[in-house]
Length: 129
Image 1 (cartoon, rainbow, N blue to C red):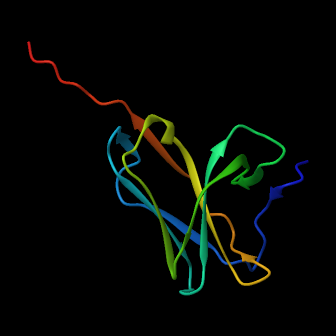
Image 2 (image 1 turned 180 degrees about the vertical axis):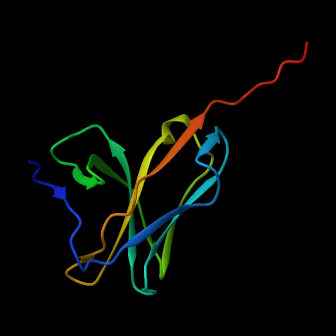
Image 3 (image 1 turned 135 degrees about the vertical axis):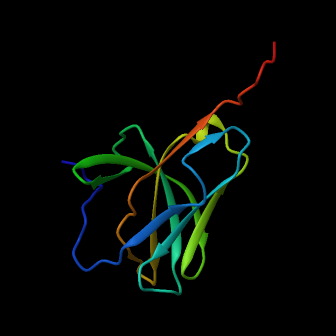
């Protein structure tokens, strides 16, 4: 069992994670991930996470019977949706991303979003012979 384990809870707001392009990127491309709270529009703060090797201090989530260790990569404050832009994309950005929103004091959290994989490959050089 994991101390920081997060399991879906009935009644918690759901968030949707979307990407503005294909998941396969080339180094130097720009990509924006967006996170929206279903049925709610204001006062949310968004947190962005990327999967990481398991470590006891990281958050551990279960999604469709698969476990993920998550490391916080960015926060953004917005209304109905938050966004996280990678520009220029680099090989180190390859990974699986999730978002979550919170508001209020003490903080009230949504569920974590569905995982969104991103792959960044090296530049493709064409050689004409």
